Image 1 (spheres, helix red, strand yellow):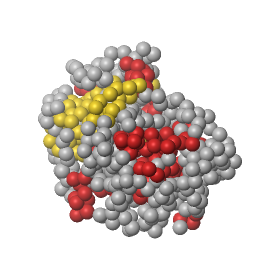
Image 2: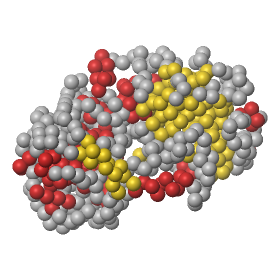
Image 3: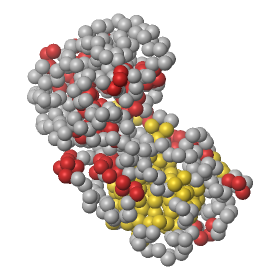
Image 4: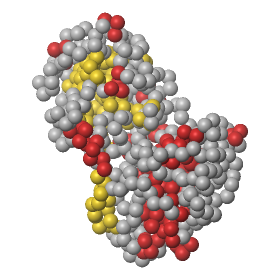
Length: 567
């Protein structure tokens, strides 16, 4: 793994840099873009995936999961491999071409806009990379299908050459950016990409090849073109790639919907709310990384390494009541960067405040994208006007949260640590392997864990999800969960799915214990309706059950997890 070094990082960030490892994830909302050539009447092809295509087969393969079976000696615990739900890896390889040979090197500034439900997160910086023409580099981990990657191109004199944007596909994506012979004055970029499941550098047969042009103007705005007929397309022809088509071929999301980029008004390449690193001259703020043959970069790690200078200025990730040495700082900061959590208008995070069922539903909805395993129900105490109505409805359908009694959700009830753990284990459909009692023996208060919850806690323990502060060996299941504890547990749950980087912490159960792992492959049961028993519960347990683990607390009125009146 190649690490990117920064020329500029503040003291507190530098102190924690060695602890950072990947972060998920995610893509900012993109203002609609327009083609300046739409008025000319050129048509745009919306790519349709053939019914027998590799990409569709890859989507079908998502049911396969790889798990590692762990064996644990008494008073030790193992962290199960984080590759729980893997089909084909989502990543991309990027090559840059200039057929005329007038350029020998270029700088590619790479950023990501992570997809979140039906929109995108704010654009995050992934680094500046100096490429030799025809050179390729691979970017892996921390991505999912639908994320958008943005590439701004410069020459080695830092003159802007052009802009491209493409969509991550369901498996590895191979991407080619082709510049014109007069790239400094003719700022057009051809983008050619598609699925490369076997990662041999070519687009797989039977899959769609996306092929289109972007043109930047002198006022640094960009348009996605409907056609190549307005300029000499032959200068963008590369022998190894398909012939330039007269009509552009785009992914569906680029041509339809709120975030379409074709036939809209052009957008600024450098908007005012971009991250500091995305507005700076290459090399002035962040060191340019030299790409070598077979270079590979870990996106989740890059997100964390560049977090301070790589996020939109509109995001708050530092809080007055979360010190640089606070035990949960990295968990809190990264979730804030991912727009899963937010602070309060007074600049605080309130790490010791409890979390209600409604607030936790809002967090889960932002953190996880899962299929529905059951029908929604109309909770009697959650009106359609309630701020978290949609979040509660959706996470219930995903299997994370149940009714407390009958059809009551009890949205203002505070959650215990056990409630949080049980919800994560059930929603992610995690099950244990090996002896539950042996796994749980790492906890000095293991005997207090109820029988119906023991296998669920063991499953989370195996995967390194459990975080105990201040005593790593004390589960304290009945204690009301604080915002900082929920941040740590939620982040570790995301890490177990490999959507974000692992954050090293002495309070993660398993990090300091002896580990012995035996690999085993098994088929996922995700999508199967969970059993109806007490360990289905969250809050006061499953429908009809009442473990009595939580007590009521104040309600909430927005999806940022704030209490009424922001108090």
